[in-house]
Image (cartoon, rainbow, N blue to C red):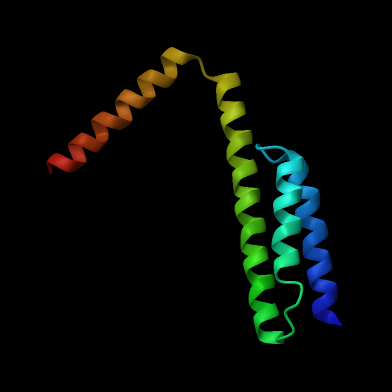
Length: 101
């Protein structure tokens, strides 16, 4: 029963996270539903634990995607284009110096 509860909780959390998915909530929810339905007949407890772990990994990846999107949006708001280009040139110069050593 604990696995069932964990699977349902994972589904609910991923479904909630899907509302902000870049490709659209409907796209995400359909893919989520299909993935869970594909494995709905699984009865092996070890395999279910593995699927839950993979689901948690996907959840963390989506959180990272959202954090990156927020970071990029904030970066665009507070840095002008010239400053960004200057930083990019400095980074490229630094990388070339490291490669030449």
